[in-house]
Length: 87
Image (tube, rainbow, N blue to C red):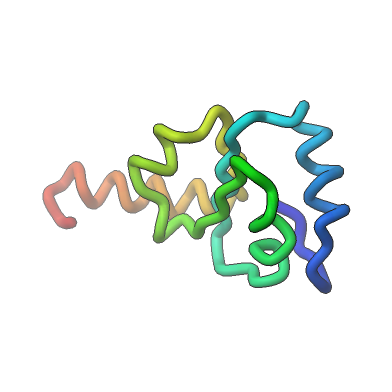
């Protein structure tokens, strides 16, 4: 997800067009990004969450998941902890 200096629905619309306008997309961010959240919240079918907040429903409801690289590392660490029984 792009780092936005200010909320910009146009930037999110352009990003969604580049992704071929998926019906349901979840953006997974490494850290909270208030400007991106404000920019994306009015688009139907778009969910924005942090890697710490990502849950099974976010994954199941999305046709497409777009994640920042750092967010993927956070999710991988969460899964490894769960596999070891340290939830």
